[in-house]
Image 1 (cartoon, one colour):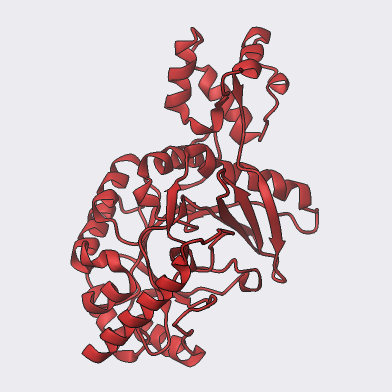
Image 2: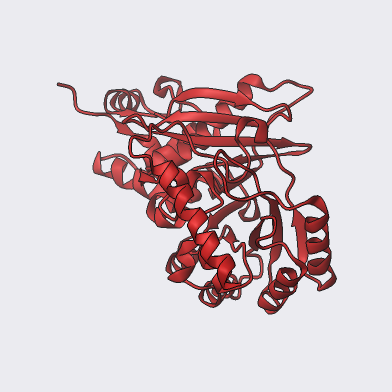
Length: 375
């Protein structure tokens, strides 16, 4: 029986150095491999011509470069692409590429499913399976870049310029694997992405925000979605453990003396729930002393959802109140909703033998009824 090969996508520079030094090789081999794998997208060790024949032979015998395989690819009418990737055991994740003039954003998943039960997110309905490995996280970028190169044309070049960790899962609950993937995204020998072009989104795992600050300098996005703890605890249940004031303090600490660090407050617009002028003015007061951008996100429906998208007029009025108060505010354009690739719609093909989806929707409905009675 042949031993399982080492997937080199699982290693950042420090990990590769330790592996190769253990083999009796020079540590600089790690940088060479990262250039070949990530900068050039090469997975054939024999093509890595600046490596010795003996080293290439050992790599071929003992290692592999193996991203999650593509199970299905969907293309939206607006050009958005979604890949369904198999991660073993009948589980899948989804990765989305959003093309725009002069840029392209890749939305990456960090977990199979999610345990945080945000009530407006389709991924929450499937529950949590497991964390993704570094290979499965960075492999999404590796695979997407190769696939986009295959379908690009001179008239329509498809290039990844931005990464958002906003796919399936809570990145800060898989911090070790995510941090290693981030280091490869940022490394000059890897993907060489500027810190402002890599964003980690969190539902509000406050202690992990402090940990992220020690190990990375990427942009941070907080899924805020409500201006009060009472409402946010209904929409984002982890708020009961880490309420708004604790999260905002963590965000202030994340920025700290690093003025180049960037924080965005994500705010999904739910009709009749969190989109009134009163909510907007409350949000202005809450964010008054923190340097951040506010990103308003029109709700993207999914089967069985108990919410509706705010009207364009409500979103515009909400935006106007924030902007008038000098809060830098944008409204996200909905992309890829015809292939369920829009924000909050990622769920993957999961066989739900436990009727988890129905139970989740019932809990959400009951929670909203209780919240409305209290208002």
